[in-house]
Image 1 (cartoon, one colour):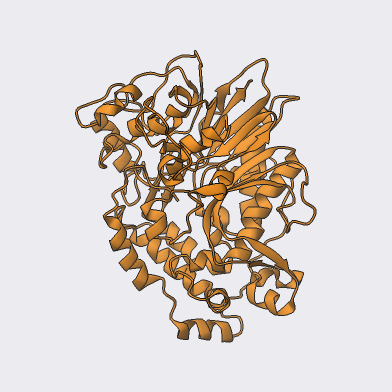
Image 2 (cartoon, rainbow, N blue to C red; image 1 turned 60 degrees about the vertical axis):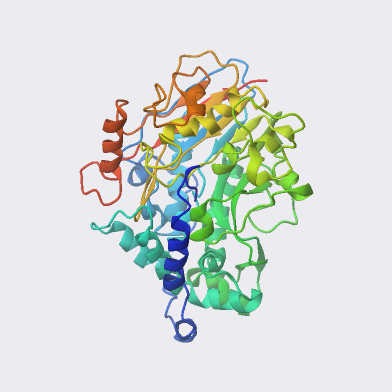
Amino acid sequence: MTARLSAPLGRGARLARLLALLVVVPWTLVALSSQVPGALSAVTGGGDGPDHPDAAACARYRSPDRVPVSGHDEPDARLRVFAIGYHLDLGHAESYETWRTAMRCLVEETVLPHRKPGVPTLIVFPEDVGLPTVGIGARGAGVRAQARGAARAATEAVPLGMAGALAQLNVAYAPQIAAYQVRFGGVDPRKQVLLGATDTFVRAFSRTFSEIARDYGVYVVAGNNQARYRVSRDPAEVALFADPAYRSTGTAYVATESRVANVTFLWGPDEVRADAPDFERNLLFRNEKVPLTALELDLLGLDEGPSSGAAGRANASGVDVAGFRVGFATSLPAFGYGYPFGQRPAGFDPCADLRVSYAACLDAQGVDVMVQADANPGRWATAAQSGGWQPLEWMGSTWRAVADPTVRFRYNVTPMMTGNLFDLVFDGQSAITGRGATGPGRRYVGTGERTATDPAEYQVYAGDKPEFLALSPWSAPDGTRDALAAAAGRLAAGSGTPQEDGYVESVLYADLVR
């Protein structure tokens, strides 16, 4: 989960105190839930689901606010990349089957009709696309019901609804949490439910995206807050860690450490490691986000990726895909240059501290395609933050990557998740940008010019930019900032208006050339 670059850090202490009250599982409750037969073990259906769902099957998963697929074609394309601006829907995570079908329907309906024959395909899903899967099955039924509730207070500074959902999940996963607390000792209570849900994440998230890459013959990028795992067939571990609906398979997916990072994964169409655990045999790269935002640190207690040395460089090194060096900068890291636009200091070491200059280090590793998968929690059309107008601030990542003369990125690919999750808002405009592009000028909403409330250094970001190869529309037409901010309020959780949660779902594509 990602906050905007200038998210107010002052809410961190409030979030930490709130979570201390809500998500620390009472050990008496843990013991009770692990001893009462069937207390948390109702079977939820599931099954494998269709390999290639048709239009009728996909109709129930289709966002009513999806806009037509748009993109940029090149005759000499070496790679066609798709940015999936998914509209988050917790209803898709009713079961493993519904989640798998929802994700495959996105591919069937928005990618397959636009694939280019003979050209490799890279599909980029947004950051935290795996987050809804923690609510799968009987253990997540209460959370899904909460998400469907008509009355929700919009408390974006301190997301009480989201915190309450985490508290419910802590109870649902109490036996697994207790076991991991004993096994690893001192697991941060804010992230313990993400650790406890390891088996669920593997069955839902890892399997779904690994198999999409394999079955459709494509490269797939997707992200989740998930621990490393191993496959266990030990009956005791299966009884404890496996989803109750799948204990009969005799298999459990068990975390190998207490570390839970915000991870971006890249799967390929072919198996590359026969000795890897299930659903990682075709895994090509695993990137851990650094730096983390206040929300990720204070609400979820996530572990940060390596910030220096050989480990930091390896994390930022990327991987070759169809002749391009593809690297990962999951939202906030994509803003990290360590200096203003075009003003790199002499003798600057871009990899000395990746918490300051992650993007510059990515460039130093030879990355030419920056994948910026994004889940930005907060209203898109807003100036209620220290960075001024947020869409203008966002130019410091998606557009700067291909316009700043001090780096050599050729492309930036940014799918942005949209939708309300309890009282959290996810919003933004997905984009694909290219260095040296000469197409029609485009811009984010409200960025035609810099105003007095925007930082002076943002002047370079204002106005139409030819580097936008593809850009999704926003949920309201461009206009004055006041009008756009009012539209954002109507979209937000708890607004009670007909426009509530009516965010655009978009899919963009672009042909990459050498």
